[in-house]
Length: 109
Length: 115
Image (cartoon, each protein chain N blue to C red):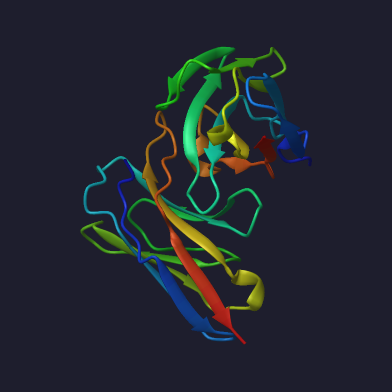
């Protein structure tokens, strides 16, 4: 079973920051938090990952709480092309990715 | 640098038939995982291959089998197709050592329709 919980859907206005929450209170200390997104009928696309510290790359920022029980993916300036299903996943190196239901993000023009 | 390549992109089969789907991993990757994604659902893990052996398996019947070749490419075989096998089949590749830094790279999938 997936070890993360996400809201089923969210809306965000184009140009605004999209903040996608994820609860992962049951992941273990050696499991990373990964975020993927899936645009309709395409394969999932890697966005960002982290263990304890906040991370930023060209696509997004990842804020992980100090107790590692939750995190937030931030898309700083959402565009229509960011409309997708976003998956928050917790897993470790010798394990497999288990997808939950994800959050369907709608970017509103 | 080529990513993960899957073939064919679309396929229509009849109930009871057998199907083989193919996957070429991203250059430098040595591990291949297969997923089944039904319409409106998240991808479900089928199995993972490393060093030409099945390393992990999800909750799928024996009708689903696979193979990994010495060049790390992989095949997914499904026997005795059922209507419920209609789905998008995704292949993902990764690097067994140090993959945490790169995660999984997914292909665009094969859309299988069973009629």
